[in-house]
Image (cartoon, rainbow, N blue to C red; front, side, top):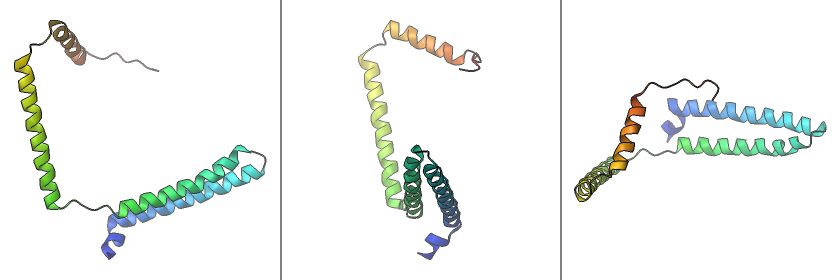
Length: 126
């Protein structure tokens, strides 16, 4: 448990959280000052910054409590991916034998392939 909170990764997450909370407090302080100075929209922002701080705390908690998958879970994932690849390859081969490609679709695919290898124009400002 101690390594969860004092590993190198965890210390970086702690420092990031501290910086995030300081930034949220300073931004909230600034927005409250602007709100009492006459900017009524700043009241909304003064409410937003504490919400951002709470979201930062939630992210910090989640980053510290990410569990690495076990070997059994990794093996099950790899088996599932292999099964999905095999089923997709089988479906593609069945589709290829059942119907031929439409000539209009083939011409369009050829056009797209030519566009993919053609040099691109630079469109500055778009």
